[in-house]
Image (tube, one colour):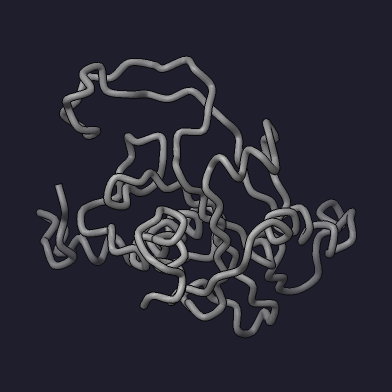
Length: 216
C-alpha cells in the first residue's frame, strides 16, 4: 500500500512524513544511499510510480526490463566526519586513500532467488513463493551509480549533478567479469561509457533497442 506523507499516525500527533524525515533523512549512509540510488535511477527511467518492491530479485522493472542498481561514492560515510581527537584505541590503522579505494567497489554476485510459485501471479505480497536454487544474475541490465563529489563541504547525495552512471547489459557484464562477486569502479569505467542523470534513459533505451542514444 502506498502511503502519503500527510497521513496521520494515530495517537502520536505525527504524520507519515514526520516518520520519514526522522528515519531516512541521512541519505549519505551506505544503506540509505543504495536505496536513494535505486530511486534516482527509477526517476530517470520513469518507473517509480508505485512503492519500492522488497520481494523481487532485481531492483526496478522498466517496462518489462529487469534493472539492478549498484551504488558507491568517492567517500565512504564511515570515518568521513571527525570531531575532536580520536581515542587511542580507535586510531586509524590504514592510509585514508586505502579506505576510499575499498569503498569504490560493487557487489555483482550471482545468487538464488525467491520467486512466485505460480508464474501467472505477479511478484508482490499476494503471491506464494518458492526458493529457486539456481545461482545466476536475473536482471537484464546493471546500472552502476557513483556519487563522485570529492569536496567534504559540498558532499551530499541529493546533488544529482554529482552522480555518474555506467550501464551494462548482463551478458556484457558477464563477458567482462565472469563469476566475480565484486568489481571495482575503475574496471566498470574501463568497459563502458559514463552517463549523467539526464542521459540515462536514452542510454538504457538504446541498449534495450528502444531508441537512439541521441534521442531525448
